[in-house]
Amino acid sequence: MTSEKFEINLGKSYPDIRKLSQDDFIRFWENQAKSLKWFKPWDTTLNWNPPFAKWFEGGLLNASYNALDIHQTEKSDKIAIFWEGEDASQRSISYAELFIQVKKFANVLKSLGIKKGDRVTIYLPMVPELVISMLGCARIGAIHTVVFSGFSSTSLRDRVEDSESKIVITADGGFRKGKIIKLKDIVDEAVSEVKSIEHVIVFERVKGKITLNEKDHLWSELMKHASDQCEAEELESTHPLYILYTSGTTGKPKGVLHGTGGYLTHLHSTYKWAFDIQDSDIYFCTADIGWVTGHSYVVYGPLLHGATQIMYEGAPDYPDISRMWNIIQKYKATIFYTTPTALRMFMKFGDEKPNSFDLSTLRLLGTVGEPINPEVWKWYFNVIGKKRCPIIDTWWQTETGGMMISSLPGIESNFLKPGSATQPVPGVSISVVDEDGKEVPANTKGSLIIENPWPGMLMTLWNDDEKYKDVYWSKFENKYYPGDYAICDSDGYFWLLGRSDDVLKVAGHRIGTAELESSLVSHDYVAESAVCSIPDEIKGESIIAFVVLNDGIEITQEKIVNELRNTVRNSVGAIAIPQEFYIVSKLPKTRSGKIMRRLLKAIANKEKVGDVSTLEDGAAVTEVQSAFDEIQKSINISDR
Ligand code: ATP
Ligand code: MG
Image (tube, rainbow, N blue to C red; front, side):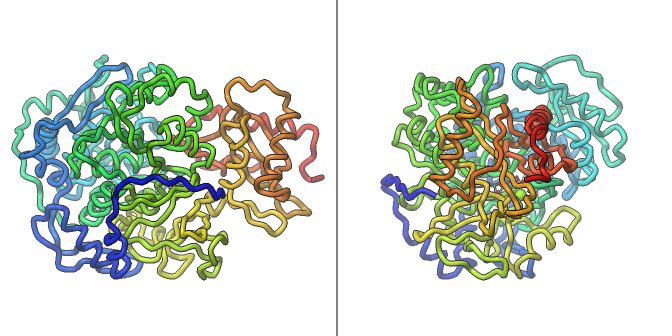
């Protein structure tokens, strides 16, 4: 933890918003919900039958209506999406055009027999048709379930089967680092035996040769004949909008089910508070829509506000490490929202690249997905934001639907601390508790819990109420347990210290993975790091560290390790000095870019690595394994 504070005066101050939320969170969210267009107002703001919450029961609305119809008078010509293909092709789609496409696609779904409540799996690359497909589903009350297009046929099949989808929407292919990924072939392999699938729709992205099977239809053919008249279905607030599987960082992905009215209320408010969105903004979020950040802050949040955004199709480092800076410069982006893992990658290659682009249009920077190391935060602030742009570090989960902890430049001018996500958003109460669920004093580590239901919260896990209760609600009575370890400091600022399951317990001390990794990353040699523990007869557990070095570091391993030991000694304490260091070129990560510490731990403990279906690159595991084996040759673990 650092005591540094960064003051940025944003000129915004709506203290009432926070105050009102503290008086009565239910009334507060009720007022927020009025920003949406409802066909019929709700009867009950919150029906709380723990742990099941129904927000705005009795109300009728439609997500696609709130994303599109409401903008048609004032903003029909405004650009909704500036799309940039990996191959640098471009499309500009106005709100009017998006509206027409969505209505046509909703009619396509209807013509294929899709009805309210049916599930539709979407397995598309980052193309505007992905947004059109989701909103088309939402328009008629079908439940979309987007599967990240980097997943294998087995992962896709598992999700299609679990959701019992009737349709899969895919593309002939997608571009990734200059290569074409043949998505249609993957779909064929995945769903040919799945009984629930009645149709497959194929969008022609790469325009290669497509072999159509019996159930297959071309997107272009279906759209050619579809009418552009389609009223939005009047849906209950609690009608499911989508199922989305979590990243799988800690194990088997969970099918998170989100509703409509509560979820949209949460997004409408947090998008405005956090990004302070203005009509003139050009917003750029790098998340793939296959993850929740893409659902909430690429699709629904920006569209509810009629914002203009950039959507990029490909890899962030293709054709080179400057691609993001190039896009910011080209489209004059004003807001940039990305992940710590991407920032660590950019930082690894130094300041020269970003400094050679004009990033002066940026006014706000955001991050999500993992704790951001203070060193990386400062680099983002200094080099990308040129000390002008506030950083919003947004803590939330697939399950929470929207942001839960973040600074909020749209409503208040608080100071920022590098590495702290700052404070809960209005209407949300969060505490840090001990094992018995008792709130711990300031500056004491413990588990994060959410005190009250909130509108964006998941309704349940798809088809598995028992697991829903067990995973999130069984540890602390009637309090939501997100599984993260944290500290709240004396300013009321929250610091996320990593996953509770990954906490390092050494000689009676508990150390969050983020504390130690941030210490290692603060050293000039280190770009990335991951730590985990292994059993130790004396200390109970001992720590091992994996590090990835910055580009161009050519120093002996011995010197590096010595310096890193000193760094940890000085910043965290001698107790936290890792027993072993392994220098590797890659860390195992999920497809969403999160470090999978459970794999490192499994390797170090000589256990099976478990479910790796969400792993990005198998090579990283092999490399970690061989680095580990190499050192183990000379050390007998049981002798430690
Ligand atoms: P699974 O639940 O399957 O293990 P996952 O938790 O990685 O996967 P997500 O819902 O995508 O799936 O990620 C949410 C988690 O990401 C949070 O619980 C937290 O651990 C981490 N996280 C997200 N944002 C932040 C942030 N700003 N600071 C610290 N951690 C964050
Ligand atoms: Mg999770």
